Image (cartoon, rainbow, N blue to C red):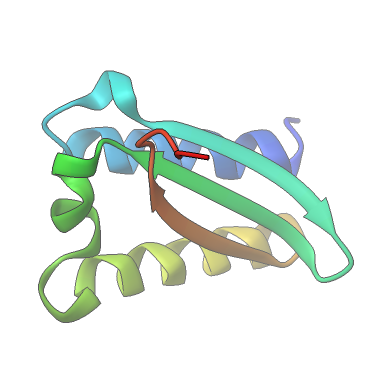
Length: 89
């Protein structure tokens, strides 16, 4: 049976790729910290609105799905959403 990290990563990747215009730009990174798993989702800047949704409804729904899947897998998880635009510095 796959571990929680791979299950959650595949779930987020599948759902988000169906929402965005640039599915190849979707990046999902799973890290573990003291509070559980942290799933960092990065999408193209042009797709941020599609992932967040009106008044954050889609982002809120994604977070609920991730939490439910994590509970089912026996762990805790949080979803962090950001764009994959390069940082200057």
